[in-house]
Image (cartoon, rainbow, N blue to C red):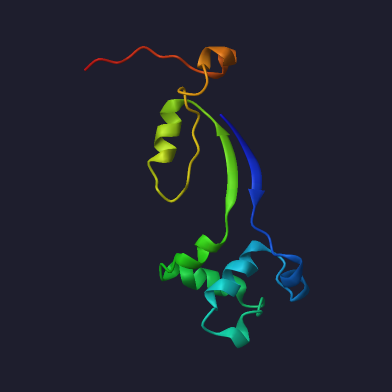
Length: 113
């Protein structure tokens, strides 16, 4: 299996000037949307994120993202795509012939029950 990080969330220049330096600060900023006077508070970001996790407030975490390229077998890919917490683009044999990719595809015999 091979995993590559393609992109991830990071603060824009405007927010970096305001002191938000990482994705943790972005999530805390978004979580404080109802408290605008405290949105740029980065001193308590870590504590706020622990609170959000403890109390299962997941929506602020959706404000950050990462894009990964995962090369794996279909068996493992099936387990990954079962979880709808992510969005997927998967190789389609309708548009490309897998035999053109040599050893990248693992061919298995069908298992009969």
